[in-house]
Length: 82
Image 1 (cartoon, rainbow, N blue to C red):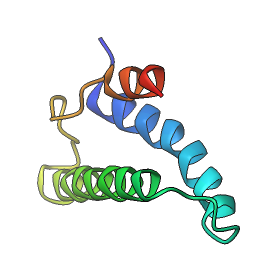
Image 2 (cartoon, rainbow, N blue to C red):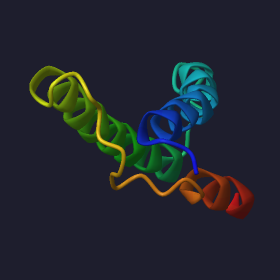
Image 3 (tube, helix red, strand yellow):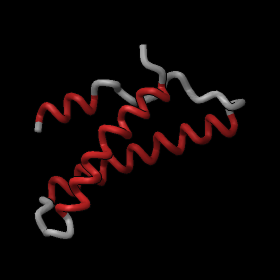
Image 4 (spheres, rainbow, N blue to C red):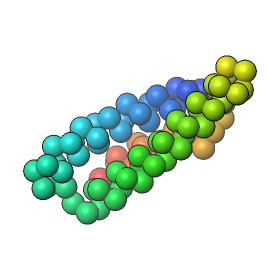
């Protein structure tokens, strides 16, 4: 089983590609409304998870949570649907 920190890291690595693609599509005016809305939602969820992770590190005795709301297969399912 992958740790919470490992799942968070995998999710961040996966979304790195989406962010890079958007950084080209948005200035070129090729980004769709759906693409922008989905990316905004992803960034909000990542922000929430990172904030929770930081709080756990700061206030949880230096130990990040080992369970969280990250579904390890979520980004894989979303990527396969596209």
